Amino acid sequence: MIWRAVIGSCLLMAAGFVSSPQAQTPATYRIENGEVPAPLTAEPGNPARGRQTVRDMTHVTCLICHALPIPEEPDHGEIGPPLAGIGSRYSAGALRARLMDPKAFNPESIMPAYFRTDGLNRVGAEFRGRTIYTPQQIEDVVAYLLSLKEP
Amino acid sequence: MAAPLPRWKLASALIVCGLTGYSAAPPRAADSTSVPYETEGRKSGYLFLTPATRTLQDDEFQNPGAFALERGRDLWDAPDGPDRKSCASCHGDAATAMVGVAARYPVFDAARNGLVNIEMRINAERERMKAAPYAYESDDMLALTTFLTAQSRGMPMTPDIDGPARPLFEQGRAFYEARRGQLDLSCGQCHDDRTGLRLRGDVISQGQVNGFPVYRVSWRGQASRHRIFAWCNTSVRAEPYAAGSPEYLALELFMAWRGRGLPIEAPSIRR
Image (cartoon, rainbow over all chains, first blue to last red; front, side, top):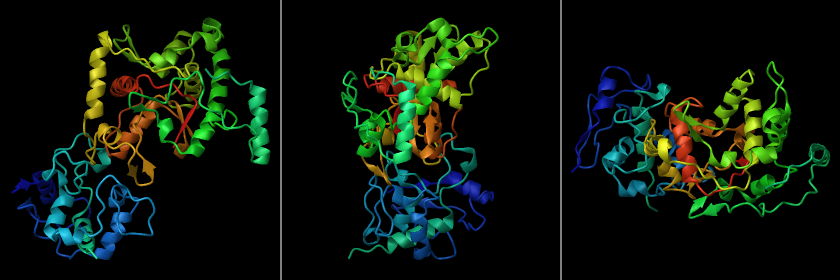
């Protein structure tokens, strides 16, 4: 069982230093039994918007490292495992936890934590105190990944 | 070592290529006197290039780094400062005097109690000439470093990491191994552990520095080792250091050692 409070992010969010004006954030969350069971936002995740987010080349995108069933995009990365069918293998809470803080599961993981601001070294000025994804982006991407069912 | 190409020949070849869009010069094989592009598992970035880009690098008539090389050759002979001295006034022919210099740099400098790379040595010499220093990433600096480095073309990198350089070398190693930035990545997580894999459309190389200064295709120009360090740091959303900073000098020494035995390649091309 993994208990990991992502306190840095929570404190910052509580203080209002959120990474986007649209962000609605929980007062606190932790990874429990490998999951963050509750959504981070009141608005449900939108899988179509999530699909856009993971291929958005102006951002840190899943496609850089993972293959995804997005045939119109060339050159999917091969650093991480392919994500087709992942929605059949993980719950929403498990996907959310792995996206927010993969290092809670494997400290040696190369995957960035998309919702963490503590424990980082020499973060660039424009990114300091900010998470990679906003809470809504987390929810959208989780909804998209959850939609990737095994055939 | 690659024989210097007469300037008129290069100029006319470039004009002909420009007019016809065709080069009559056949792709040149890697210089037969060069040490190999791979040694003991260490691989030059050359081996991660597409065949087309390799051909471009190998062909003196098409290699875009030739412009910097030729400009550097001019600067070597150009008088500057109040005494109207040039590099050649004291050093003579670079093809003799500068052979092997780039292959052993950066070096420990007792007077500074720190490391000095080619760029800093050039500016130290310009100070002695009472000439204005070159800005780190200026066209003149890149041209002269390309020209100087090319005098060691094909020679293996052999930096000295012993003695007073040792603690600085260890600093460079620590820098290389430290995770940094919002993406929380160390250099080695990609350039040691995942070379050959695709990061989007790019194949991850070993990040070797033996080709520098390089003509970087995506920047359409010459680039120094410290510029690529800063670019890599920025890419993982880390705060970069300044070109010429002690941090990047230490990293440069570590990187030269990490690629020890690989050939100096300037003028080289990287994506």
